[in-house]
Image (cartoon, rainbow, N blue to C red; front, side, top):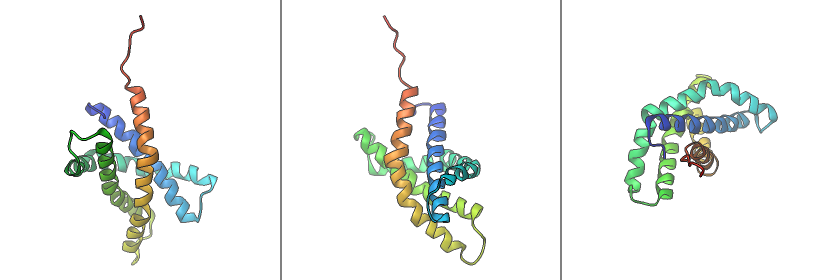
Length: 156
């Protein structure tokens, strides 16, 4: 969908911001035993660390590899929905373990259980990240992005 480097950057910033917020809310809720109103504020504090990490990973690493993976599954001539789904799934498949690692390093105690904490985060986060990407964040960000990139028409 994004055609220029600037539009890809803006798309990445929007997508990573929404995904990080949802995933941070989800992980804090798991950590405290449920969703409360204060979780939404706590998530904003954690975003200060996690959003830049997600955006940088996407720009430098994940975007390129996700594209390669997606186009091993689909062809550029396939229906746009198939390409979108392949890209979304590929991004989640790569980002989830990386962001779970970042969260484990930043927000967990370093002890003998650190590896099991990491794998638990991945197992819990992957289904939620996939659902959030496919059903909420992906459609929302594409809608927002398309709204700002509509061709301008001149009224007669």
